[in-house]
Image 1 (cartoon, rainbow, N blue to C red):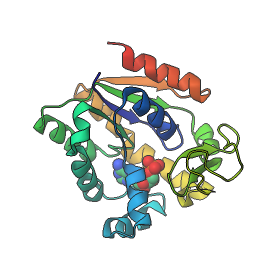
Image 2 (cartoon, rainbow, N blue to C red):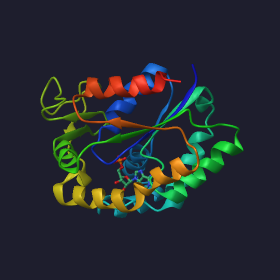
Image 3 (tube, rainbow, N blue to C red):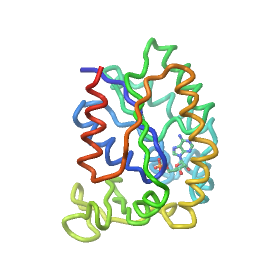
Image 4 (cartoon, rainbow, N blue to C red):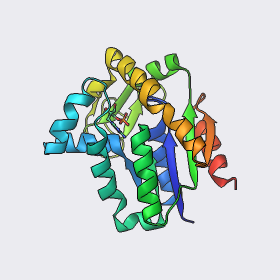
Length: 218
Ligand code: AMP
């Protein structure tokens, strides 16, 4: 089954964790702009250097930078059997550009899944988050601990806290979300994109069950 999916929601709502599982079930590529930008930073590319100054402050990276990455990624042949977008679009101009890219290739989104949870819950989820330095797998000190403390279950890499996951930066990211990203939901609705709101309270299995049910619904 081919599915073009979009996971949308504030930082810390669990998009990344759910996206990995969802992409695995549907066997579609997981396209996360945050992961792509962090990989660019690690490889010291010009895009990475440009992005770092924004990410470190908890600000959104300029649209042109992100759009160039996404346009290239969506042109890969592996997206022909579907894809899962995570963390993109984050501004109305990004959503408009995505709409143009999709219609230009005769594609459309099958589901836009909008996850929501209270701000205080988001802050505590982000504060406990750890990621693998090598493969970017995501953990949480209490909700999803690794088998061996500080070590990635998947690749044995070292677990670190993202530099933008500190409490002061988190607040900035939530402000950016409220100001620039939340209005994208109105854009989706005004343009007839297939939005489904998902309650992201609860444990990871419960949330996944809600997402999966929403995707299977016609
Ligand atoms: P994430 O891993 O999705 O939480 O993204 C981490 C950071 O990367 C964000 O706080 C932004 O600074 C930047 N970023 C990721 N995706 C985008 C996007 N679509 N537009 C602008 N900035 C982005």
